[in-house]
Image 1 (spheres, one colour):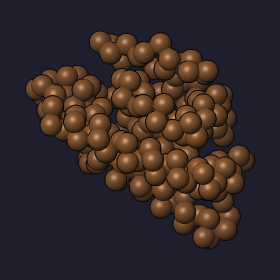
Image 2: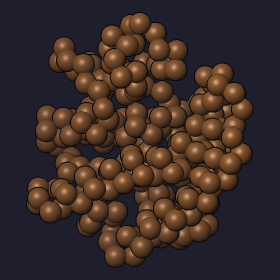
Image 3: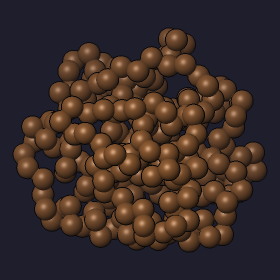
Image 4: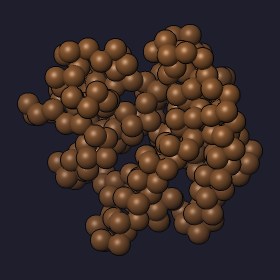
Length: 221
């Protein structure tokens, strides 16, 4: 069986978990306290980051590369289109959420509110939190614009781009940092993603000391 070293509120880990679950690939989840930077952990990934996937005797790191490897290995239930232009758009949006959204929003909200406390790295920076709360509005509006023109974020079918976005937003929703009333089309999109069987283990996540809000696992919000 595959083994995934992960942290429940890591959007990068969640993206990999969603990809595996959508393809109905069984995986053993091993929670990793990545902030401790233990020697065994660093042997698996000298970069000191999760996720880390053990598969067929290999150790894979970097979530985007892992997801594309899974895509190449398991062709059933494709999450990448075959058309080169469509594949580019998926990759562009995955990068948008894993880079721009992560830098401007996730790192400012989730890391300040949760990761700092868990890792004993001081108190939340209110300036960062205010900046993240401001920036997420821009990103939700951009998603709304995309979804006004498309059925899913990257086109007519659900792709890895949708899972990348949902991974970040679900992590933030765990701490009630997403205003779902800002856009009905984004809320409807998330409801569709949230209702998929692949999302069940995500919605069952629990982080000690940080109970999720009641709506977090409610498929009807």
